[in-house]
Length: 480
Ligand code: BG6
Image 1 (tube, rainbow, N blue to C red):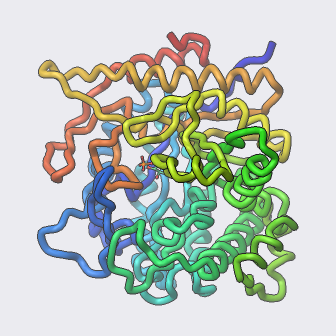
Image 2 (image 1 turned 180 degrees about the vertical axis):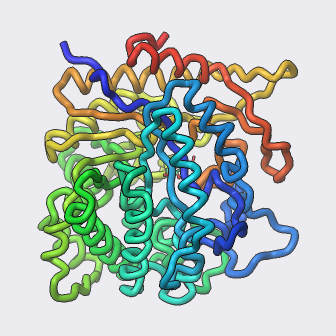
């Protein structure tokens, strides 16, 4: 029976906007994340077009990878990481997004990071844009709604590909690109929020703008993938999307059809474009019914076909059910990706429904559809951790969550899925993307940093650190 292949890429994931800090150091410009305040499970974080004195902007310092990269990479190496998912902060390289030449100090920082990873034989997996669109592009072009962003992104990619061609092999063009299919994606993912001042979950929903912005991201992604394939044949180029598994709430055909529709628009649409190289036909009806007209320029369709990804990656945290029953819908709530609660599942303190078998199901569905290598590049449990007086953190609940998901990944491999890597989210504590909190922690490593911005940024190993080290050393055999 198959199991994890011997060269399986075990590791962990982070993103610059939630981890790096040093938001204005060495010439870096502000990104849309730097303009977001903190929030909580109950109070949404806000986007402010100008900095407000006395307000906390958690991405500004985050958990300060910028000044701790050596220490952190040593911790990752101690756990036995084979791969390290991180993102390059676009605004460290092009501070407003529109410059014609890159910022040398920014490029030099990532040279140091990649060299440090290389010292330990750890492969970087780089997300080119992870919720870090330059705020300059938001102000100038209304983010990705402006077609001009495509050239800015291509220029950014040309600079980092050329510079890191011998240091980075695995690239992901956009983090969770399908966030743009949801209203909240207008903020962090698309940056279509010119002049907006308010809670991130209250941005006026303009579908025409969001889906046009997505089209520009598709074209940008395909252009740089084509470039990479032609000029840097050693590169492996991947997509990255949220896979939020949906089940019909009942076997009522209405529920089944609604579920199919949600699966398509939310989970399949963006990756169908990335993997197959063209818009799926089911989107025509969606666009028509929602009054959306995608404006394409000559050559766009050709470029999509020429810039297909080499591997498929996704984040997996939860599943949800789809119902058409008005009574059921009325009682629904508590899940980020919509849908109604599944009575067979438990949920995290933030209401995210925990469904390890859903991961096996999803891996099978994705692999059946695309037949290219897959990587789970985010998965994990956001939880409240308690720092004991002796400095220990007993996070057995996190170990339980991850263990069950790893078991189901192995089942999927046995089912025949070509799964090549696993990078649990926030392997070291970072700022939460959805709420801007520190209290929602995912890490194997605890960082002394708190919701009010206090903390000395010291690092401590949680129980899960030692457990994951064992998992990696045994190549997934010892998960107890
Ligand atoms: C994904 C993002 O949505 O989930 C990450 O790619 C994010 O940036 C992660 O941090 C977990 O979400 P949250 O809101 O708990 O931080």
